Length: 491
Image (cartoon, rainbow, N blue to C red; front, side):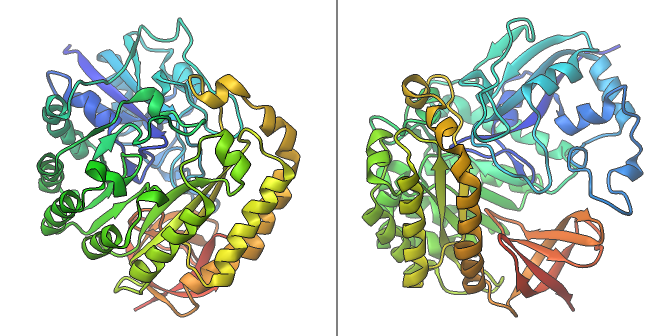
């Protein structure tokens, strides 16, 4: 019997980089690229499916009533094929690491405890890799980091490199695992890693893991081209602390990269992280020109309280944030052929930082209200509770002190933001009657189908009928909910 090397993708989410379906992150690809032959790619859903205690029939992945099993739908093989693969495996690499916990529509990442349990029936060499190796993992905001136990794995492996020229062949070789994934995926593309600042934000794991490096445009374009030959059509430049800081913010190099990628003709080309300090009109015009419509520049504001910003070494002031938002609204706020604005800002708010008080929440709300009063458009407001990961300044200085102190305040404050800010903002960004093109059906809940366009931070649209999953529809927006829309299919 031939022996195999297997990679299990338990999905990753970190300050720089997303690998939770429908995204395909970089970690399993890089791990695959460093092996001499192509490994078998499995997901945490495959392990759940193969669990000897759960004889799950395919029909139950999406029952005719109730909710789609998001813990199973991203499986790649039948349960028996997974079991046979695991029995024939002599070395397994588990990719684990949620370091910016979120809510996921169509996937459930694996916890460290779950992975250890699901692998326990099998005899092979266990290797743990991914963000978990540096700092740990936690699926819920406000919790304590899960860290690897001494006896759970034979090896903790950092997927490190000295230069991008060294990593490039692995990037191209590891792209081949795309062929083993039956579901539609957005490919996360790395443009750089590390923090552009001499000292990063108190909570962030990125400076702990990496020193600052940038890839050259030619190598990035070559990787995207490789994926497109494999059938990939959607990409996000997301594995960096700030895409506007690419190559120190050099406008010529940003233009070279974006123009080269756009020339390949991907169906979706979006971005993620953006430091408000680096958002200028000249850079914003390049992104608005070459990205496909509906992209979001997610800005890690974290807090509008200047005292909290100082204690946590946050990267921008309130004034800088507002100027960046105004620039993106002027340049990217217009409507497009797919029904979305071209390029809008997103806001990240982080609860539980050093120095937080009830006044901090009031200042955060006042800033969001000012955006609404000024008529500024914000694609989404992401609110989460911080996880103090080992190795970060927050962990060393205060840990979860302010989370414990202020958690009682969070629920009411979040509801106030959702009702008084989010709802009105969605009405402005997506007015009733807006037609969103090529919206993909993802999961069912009873007789409701939840759909999203393919891209970065796409809005969820609930359709009150049971549509076939994985299909594309044009939808007319009929109403607005706190963080999503309702719509109807049009011919």
